[in-house]
Length: 309
Image: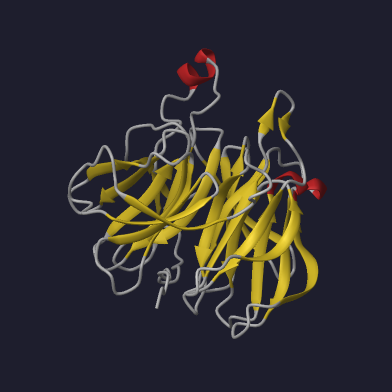
């Protein structure tokens, strides 16, 4: 599309996910799930640093509000906190376990997560993978507040993924990937209660292949949805279910997106090379890279950090 530029800005990783923009430091944080690494991309210098977490596959990483160099992350089914000076690499972070979820399902793991306007963490899980794919209906979506007691909000989830809230803070959008749907809930920002579920966008009624993965929202209220095995990000109006535009990438496994940059007008998109055959890797050498998309003419919101106290 005219005026829009898509560029790979990192070297490929395995399963890149969970991009989170930090406006204060102008850094983009993201994870490589199965490599058990968190990354910090210093966007002014293009320096990339990483840290290894020993607890298990890392689904997300989020800064803690008003606590420089402190983060929370989900690794396996552990909710962790740690301190990391992301100017430097770390091969063995010291972590503290704050809570555990899905205690009766040891093979589950955390997947995507976001922080809402009140500083609460919404973090989802998914079931284990077998030869046919992810075991369905084993995951949940949790709400974690400053008391660090996970509250199960949704159950019988297969792959808990994208989360977003509108500017009025009265709608929450959510993705359970295998459903191929983006659903909307009426959202009470004070209590976190969800009611009145409806379908905001349904890939089953389109000719678009793949599954919805992570997503973000712009200040106009439109969603930006990563399509895993679909090679694109969809820009969707969730009020009327209209597809506004589709941004293509030189990689098929698009995992998530977030707005960043000084003006919050750059769309950062994570991708995956995990599970590709050698022939597929040859055809898409940039798979697993983080991409920047400019010239979209829209802006996102300042991301929220977790409020622990």
